[in-house]
Structure formats: C-alpha cells, structure tokens
Length: 227
Image (tube, rainbow, N blue to C red; front, side):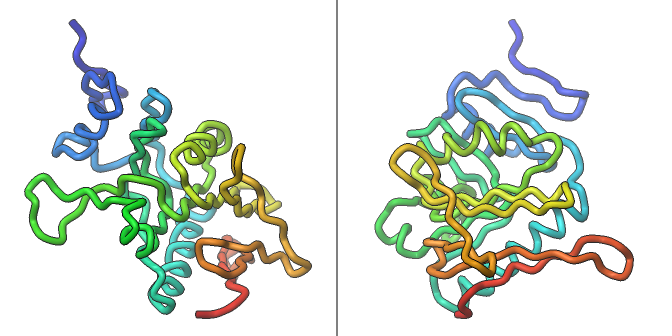
C-alpha cells in the first residue's frame, strides 16, 4: 500500500487524509524546510520554485518591514513572515502566507490561538490557529490560481478580516486591499492619491515602486497616517 508521495526526489509527502494529519506533519521534524506547502480544501499544494528576487522577495521584505514598524510603534500586534503557519479547522486550511498580522486584541479575545511547540517550552510557538487580522499574498508564476482563485474564499471561510493581494510581475503593479464582507472579500476603494483603507491598521496604504540605478524594481509601502 502506498504510504507516501515523492515529488522530484525533493519532497516526500506522507499519507495525509485530513487537515489534522497535515498539521501534525507540518509541525514535525520531517516537514521540508524549503518551499511552500499548503493544505487548501483537502488539496496539498506544493511550490518548490525559487522566489523571483525583484517581483516577490524584495517586495515581501518591504511589506513586512513597513508593517512591523507601524505595529511596534502603535502597539497593535505581531507581524510574522512567510514561514509562519496559519491553520483553520473550520475552513480546512493550513498555509504559510507571505506576511501575517495578528493583533493583540485577537489573542486576548481568543479569536486566535498561538500553538506551542510539542516540547511545551515557555514562549515557544509554531503555529497560528484561527483567523489573523491580515494576510498578505504576493502572486508568483506558480501560485496565480491558488492566490487569486482558491485562497481568497478559503481565507473568507476562515474568518480572515483583511486580505492584501499583490502582483508585481507586470508593468502595471496590482495592490488591492480586501475587507471581509458577508459573501466574500470586498475590495477597498482607493482615494485620489491611491491610498486604500486598512481596517487592520486603522489607516490607508498605497504601494509605490521605481527602478533603481541598476534597472531593478524597488518598493515603498506608504501609510496615510504615521503611528
């Protein structure tokens, strides 16, 4: 009987029939330390391709840096990078978004639970269970359908309050903030200067980019109101 699947001699996926099985594997020592492996609606999605340096990686760093600065200055909560796992039993979801924001309020009101390491060492956590206040997904060549088609409804079912979708692969930069609505995510309108309201951070944001002297894209996430 087949008990695992091996992809390109790089990733061995054990027999996973439930979200609980996947979460147990994802938190084990056998889980791969590279690539992105998500569980969405009973489907395991594996992306082992390297990140594009200037349409994904540097952009992700700018978003994370800007949000960390604001979250720390305003005392709003925690900003996590792309190895932070978010799971929702209600939505059948376990993923590693590009950037995640969890407010102190969400933790205090127990909307979100920080899952401790198996060792139960004080202050050591390995997973976010429940809906974050904000999830950021940056579209790449191998994730287009997942990021734009499959993940948004899954995040909505999970109760994620705000979703940012960003696509920097074309000449026209796409930056769209979405708010959790009754039937799905509703796009936030932009004002005359291009700022869109973030309910998670209580301010407006716009994303700008320019080419540096070497011809590569550089990014700036501007906040409408500083902390």
